[in-house]
Image (tube, rainbow, N blue to C red; front, side):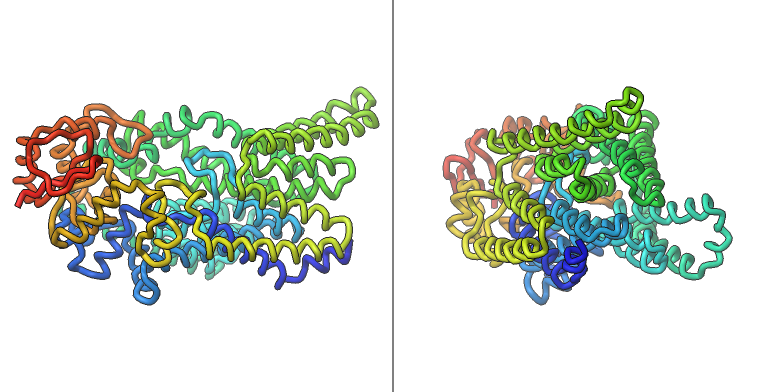
Length: 630
């Protein structure tokens, strides 16, 4: 056992493994140019070149007014000038995953004093999915965004809070807040609040107030918050939407699944929310029953309680008594902390149970089930119930010996059933297979130090070969049909493989526009072609996904949406754009199109196959038509 501990204490190997796993994760899940990238890649390009999209009104106004992503854009711009934009995002993805891996390892080790648990937790966080409450089921970074960067920094904030490193906590909180005000700001107040609460409970609040580093850290964090609050407040002195208009626009125009609690969690993800709550309660119970450090139990309770209050507050002050401030704050990404803690605790139980002969097979079952997120959640809850029976029910009937045999037997049965679940097609994709391989190697290593060293060598070779294969052979057949291939995120150019994987007709249109239209032209586009601005590098009148943040720009953006795609008479939920926009655009007459073109000085109109027109076209590939007006 001591030799195993000595082996795990070699920091060089541990961090080499963490970096390899993080790099593998980055290659596996990487995506570029989809989702939120459509809204802030043009901002970075325009900061780099003021002549980029010179007549794009919305994006010009975004840079002239307040925009929450401006600090993030300037950070990317600085690196972009050295290596280019696609490479900047790829490198940032890798570095974010390395940071998430290191933070996961350090926090787990701080919680458990067990390096094996830390290593396994890192592997799990960087490779598997968890329950989907909060829309995203992965904790690692695959689509680099302000939220991913703020979350990676937030994990180190968690560690700094645990170590009572007040100055470091303040600096990290300030940087995270500048990158994403909602995630960094909320986590900053959450963690500083915990420090204050603990000092009150431990009756050393006066000592905390006399700590200069606490004040220094708090002031630095508040300066980071002011970096957003001041410019936001300044733009309100010139023009301000009414509270009613603001709530309506932010709550139901700007991708409302971030805003509407009653649908977002209570309906669409009710099962996930229930699983997450039951798992967290089970973790708290097991933390006490299995002899973990009691000092951290109140930290888990605090985080869960505060974030639950945020959830309830979101419902009350967004839907019942709408508040401009709460609508601004309402986003669910800070719930990732709870889901991240869930993965860490699951990994802790795997190592803890494996070390106990009575529970060893349950540890194996849980290790196998973690990648199958829902099944893993159910097993955690089932094991918690098993421990409850063992500690509080079985002794009353003097059945301890029989129950111990039943525990081992049930662990074996559950392990076999989990293996069968893989063969039946539940979650069989490469990343799960790789994860199981790593977990299996780790498990074998428990029998002897030699086996563990062999597992380490195989681990490095497997990850290294996978990374090499990903570099040489792009993942076209595996990636999301809406993401780009390897050649694009390294060179910024489309390959023939990309065109065949993507909507080829769309890219035929894009290439024609790039080669045959002036760079300062303005286009009217269908509401669902939200990547047009980024791919064609041409200005558009408006698009639903390119939402701004300053009041004046938001009012212009909403007015253009209603003019081009029709008013939204219903509150759409869980869709990126109002559901009536697409049929409205398809039914538009030539007379209506020309009226819009005259109002916004449109040079070209893009129509899809569902639109009819009597106007002559300069491009038609059966799926898209292009009309030139000037």
